[in-house]
Structures are given as C-alpha cells and as structure tokens.
Length: 567
Image (tube, rainbow, N blue to C red):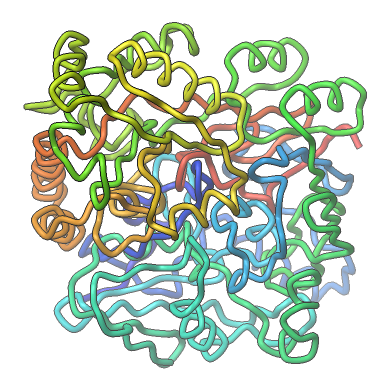
C-alpha cells in the first residue's frame, strides 16, 4: 500500500474534535482510502513554500520569519501579534482539573487547551479534511490490521526536547491504560501491539479499524506528552505545567479558573501561531460570558447553546453556527430495571415527542431525526424503518400494564440540558411515569456512568464518522463504559462498519445498526445540537469565526491560526 497524503488529497473523512455532553474517545482510527502519497508530502503546499521562504530568510540573515497565510480563515489576512481571551463555561470546558492528557479525566471537554499546548498528530479541517500536524502521514499494512503513523522530522517540544517516534510510542502505551474518558477503546481483549518503526510508530490490532485516524482526533493518542518534562516535574506538577509540541506554552495555570499561554517559539510551523498570548477564562454561564464580552474582558466564547442568547451575541459580535454531527439522545441502561425490560423502553419511545421539544426550546430550527448522526455527519439517516414514534395513549397503556414506571433521569449541569430534562419529565409524567431529575458536574457525570447504576440520561451521540469520538460506539457498544447497551449483534454490525473503507458498505452496516437500535428500543434520538461560537469583530480562528465539522459535538478550533487584528 502507498501512504496517505492528507493535506494534499484531503485524506479520509475525519471528524471535528471536541466535547459532547461527556468527552471523546472511543477507539477507531482510520484505515481509510487506499490511494495514498508519500508520508513526507503531507505538509500542505502552502506550508512547504513557507518553509522554503524561511530557509532563504535564514541564509539572508533575517531574524524574523513572516507568518504564512491562513488557509482556513475565510479570506481574512491575520496580523501577527496581539492576544485573545477566550471564555469557557465552568460547567463543561471551563472546569479543568489538570492538563496532563494521561490523567485528565475530563476528556474531550478540554480539547481546546490540549490542542493549544500539545498540538495534534492529525487535525480535522473543513469538510472532513484530515490535516497532518505533528504527523506527516500514515499507511495500512498487515492486511490493514497495522496502522503506521509517520512523525514529522525536526519537531521539538516547547522545552527543546526532540519530538520523536520513541516519545509517541511510549505515550501511546501509557494511554491505553489510563482512565481518561477520551482514551482509545479497542474492540479486543488484549492490548494492541505498539512499536517504533523507521520514521514513525505502528499499532497492530486484531481487527480492521477503518476509523483509526479519524478517531485519533478526539482521543489522547493525539496529544503527546514530553517524557523528559514529565520525568523532571513529576505527574502532579506536570498536570499544572504541561509541556507539549503545540503552538503555545504554559505561562500559568489556575485550574478551572484561568489558563495563560504564550507563543511557542519552537513550534514547527515557522511564523505560527499568529498570537503572542492566548488566555482561557472560566465563566459561570453563558449570560456571564455575554456580559464579559460587552465589557471587553473577554473576546470570544465557545459553545453558545441557547438560540435566544445566540441572537444576542450575534447582534454585537461575529457568531458562527457550527455544522452539527451529533443529535441529542436519551440513553437507557438496559442492564438494570426498569429498562432491562423492552416494554418499559418502548414506553419511553411512545411518550417522547422530539418535535415539541424542538419547537418549544429551539424554535423548531433543527430537523428531528431517528438515528445516531446529525445532518453534517457522513452517514446521516433522518428516518429509520421500524422507529417507534410518539403515541401517548400507547405509553399510558404500557405504564398501566406495568403497574407504574419510576426512574431517575440525569444530565449535565447546563441550563439548556436541564430545561430539556424538565420538559422530558413533564412528557413522561403525562404518560403516568414517576420521574426524578438529577444534574451533575462533568466529573460527577463521568463517575455516574462508570458506576453502572444509572437508569436514563439525556446525552448526545454522534460524530462526523460514527465510529469515532462520542459517536454510536461510545454510546451503544458493549466495550464502552458510557454505553447502556450490551449486544453482540450490534457490536458486530458496528465493527463491520468500521472495518471497511467502502462508503456504501459502511452506510449499509450503519443503517442496519440504526434499525436494530430502533427495533430493540435501546434509546430515542431527538434532534441535532445547534451550537454556536462567537468572537469580537476583527478576531477569529478556524472553528471560531469560520465553521468546522465537529470532532465530537463541537469543532476543534485550530488555535495556531487564531488572530486578533484589533491588537
């Protein structure tokens, strides 16, 4: 097989990296298309021409390297220098216990910080394009069960330590043993075989994983720890003062409050990042972010989920509607009562009217769907054969036949999610059910899933490619700790889907999987998350001021291209 050239040919369709109601990380990575180019050609033409200009500048004795143009900024010409303060909601992105990928249990919620500090082996660009960052390419061997990833030469961590295949291999071996919700989860009982190879690192599985590279973009495999800095600082200090090979390095970190970063002068893309400083600050809620931006104490806010507040932001700032790959879904724990009984599960379907939720909470702007993808997903299917629709009389009849139906419904501590839970509670009570509500912080929500005693949850399920991130495998396969379903039949369908590079064949397996979920009533789907990012006029970044496909639920912003032309 020849090697994949991502930035030259667009590579395999990947997914945007980022946070869902939980965090990313199931374990596929792309076995993708069969036509590939040399790993060394992965850098874009723009990057190569800029490198040539840098080489010439060095020979002329020039001290400053001009920044390259931004290929993903919608035609804007970013200025070099300046700073940007990004506000993050404390209930999700804005609550980070530590930033060592191997001990950070918040997973995908911390993607912005991890990407800015550590960079990425592979990034997700516009229209599902996989971009080589710290890696230059990949190829499949051994009947496509071995994936070889080639590491960019000459890269250094921000402390000057060489970024090597040995460092990547050592990091991956630790990653598979961690408790992070965004670690890769492999559909095999034995650990994968990870080796250093000439110019890169290889991983060998017992099966074919066609989504391995795409899934890497939302997992800790993508963020490589600096081994020397970790050994020198120790785990506790490294979590507060991490060293990576990304566009920025840490100045100071007050967990869950303020993270101050500055430009990494050793970043491999000479002239990037554009910004000298990048600061992340926690805010209590979306309203607080709005007030802070009006007051000028913040210039950007990620993940505006309220349509009403989105309109308010849009009247003063640049507002970008991000393509949705993830629908809300109502997860049912089929291992314990009452939803180990298919009759009780059917009652939930009959009592749930997604259209009413959409109309009342989101103005009816998002299409109701019946499967685990949203319209921006690669395998979106709006209507699924055999899906159980809203019929209140049938829900009431089932509840009466069961002699009642009681359960606890939980979600994350988020105003929008809590409003939805309250609306669902009203629907289910109308069907005669007894419903208790609970809301959790992100860390507590993760613990609730891991405990295995939960009953029903409002979450999300979806990704650009279903096998990756917080996609269908994350929510519905037996090997995921965040799943309420344990079905060998469904596992097989999803494994076959991720094991082929032929789009039509994959689509067929995913359609069968969606039909099986509907038949067994394993969890209703609602409508896509309608997310927005906002930033002051004159500033931006790909995924912040221009749309990007979501790795998980929202985009993974390409921070090396962030700019503030006002400063």
